[in-house]
Length: 229
Image (cartoon, rainbow, N blue to C red):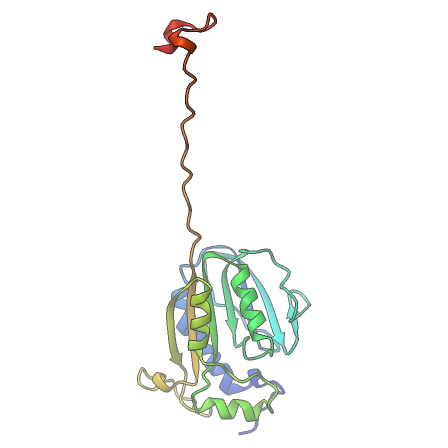
């Protein structure tokens, strides 16, 4: 099967997989609320974010090899130009396999996600019929897909709670049939959703300030007797 587009992410099979992944994560993300969300993907022409009515503004980036494009231009080996805890949702759509700097990208996604926010990751599953097809069609230019359980381990160490990990999509890239529940067990893609734990709040214990006892049990001349009783 010959691709019509120069980018594998613009090909019909991957477009269908992306649609399946978006449908899988959208119900979970419907309750995300806040002012800002960050979408980082691998599509050359970009991909519309899911319609989430409780989120205000999307920042959209496309990562390719060592650079970010889209709403800003930056190098992938540099920190994202956002403050810590800036976003209530970070969506990485095949972004971790589109750059050789996936570890740095994941670290940045963790940094800019607000406590209590959701991190959603999609990608090609490395143990599937898609993996060899993916490598051959991209001519080895894309990073080798990583097992989602590897990301699960990293995120748990970073203080995340894993809410969902599952495979989605058709078994074979050339299939145009909608997958069933059975075939999704061998689907070519995966979705991973994790929530960043909120920081624990340590209550302050207020120490009462002791009152100075009057010398020899007597009140000073400037102290009213009713104030000491």
